[in-house]
Image: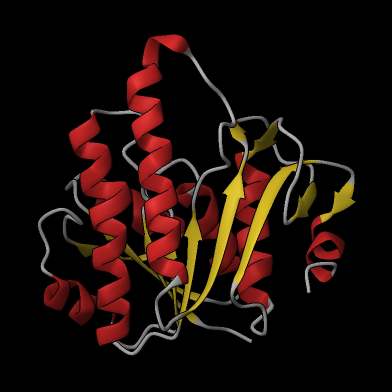
Length: 217
């Protein structure tokens, strides 16, 4: 069944893969963007671009932009930037989006989070430790909300073409997963409307995505 999906982080590496897949499935996609040059790219992907910075919009302003949406997909992230920006986007931004979804009466919220300690480089140790701390706080905030939620925790992300096969569950081994496959898994989660209040870890594997999702209770 087609839905109206509001994507935060649509111009990101996962978001850019997700949008055309949602369009192909017949969903209507509204994409929040903050840089003028992103507007035309999002239109080409098939989305309806909506201008606004997650860090600058108020809860009320963001809720107004979400009005009429059936589901939120939050795939925004600071991408290993400073501690301050990581907090502003991955924690404060997520909390703002959850509050806005509640105000806008959007019932379902899908969060692309992070697998604990998926990859570590000593050069970025302090920022990474803060990132993992913030991601945990964001997961908890969403999980304690009144929304129907699904939290996805992919392991280290790569850019190779997707293969349509994953290992998904409450806990999975360390490793890597292709961003294409994460995007396809999100589309499958949206298609399983009854799935709620689940934290799902994702790594590359041998199981077709639809089968892997069917095994999630």
